[in-house]
Length: 344
Image (cartoon, rainbow, N blue to C red; front, side):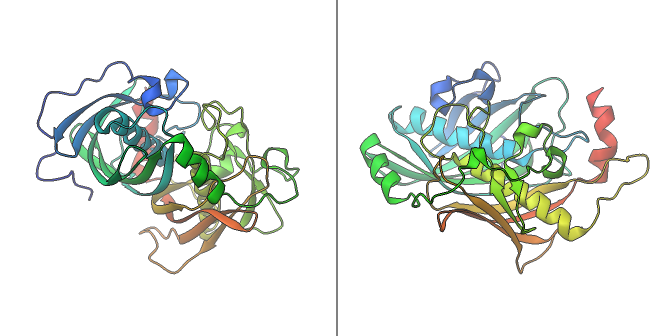
């Protein structure tokens, strides 16, 4: 069971408002619809309560047809919190790029809040630890507990650094793979996977295409995607790589656990749901070079319902961009059966 930091579920301090979103620039978003934070208050040294507003419907992150919670929505929300807190409370200049270093997460889908047509009020209990900070660079980590109605629903850990533009250019050059000759990610002729196969609602949300290897896929990039490419960037965004790793884990889990099953009157298949994982980002990915994503079974405990432990990696030009250890499992029956009622 996930528990809040310390003995109290709700940190003391002035109430955190659930209203309009924070300024878009403070979470590095162009579209107001992509801002998931409404405010933040400091409750202790290095500890914050962050108010969250999740939409009932979204262009990418969604609970699914049976009411499942999308764990990438949790991660994106905590990522925004790390950026916002860095600017607002730690004095990081607005022109400093943020580099995602790694993350961990654990979500209990049996207790995750279900969406309906209205925004869902959620709060984060966040503890930030600064590893280093000067005028040119801040390196930090955060542990965030996701709270709904004061109840802990999941946990996300985040590691990042914010650097000045000059230092960013040095990092960019040092941590970029060589550009191989070949098809660029957005122009691949490989057949895309279906949205249903990867657990998404729209075909344009699919970032993987089939190859001759059942465990390896080509990365597909749509730089016009309103969520994955909310604003212009000179590299493959970390959340795009994370979505590719997630899709590979979903497909890899489904292939290893056999055909999807149904229960009772619920005839929809049990699409694997991301439960927990650890992700490390190792290099910048280029937008104009081919990349692959591979999911392999690894030794380690499976989920209670048989979901295999998977090692998933994204590679470009012989260099690993990101690697992850991920666990998936089917959506709990209670959530599938209760989804229709939750949406009325």
